[in-house]
Length: 124
Image (cartoon, rainbow, N blue to C red; front, side):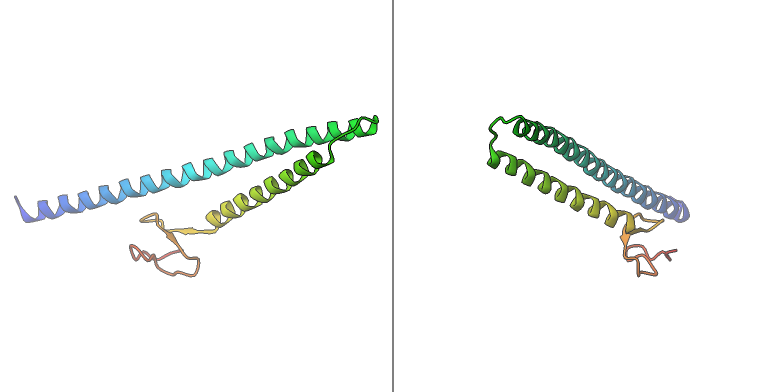
């Protein structure tokens, strides 16, 4: 086989491999982002359910019905935990948005990098 043809085929193979890796990483990031968004939705739904239960308890207390203070406190603490988890997830999402991605190889780079640490492409 002609040496130039072989060289061209080797370059095409490398390019195809790099494109496949980049597509896989992009898909992985998208799946992770979607999972985090769904988790936030689930946590918000759980908070709403707890809020309704607390509202019922407050109303029952208002009507003179005896209520369980410990159960009410546990629900309030559960809401606090869920809000903290949402804040953590949102911070992770923000950090991902702030990450600089190389336009050539798709690898994450530090915002202070002038060149990609993987492929050497000039950033920005």
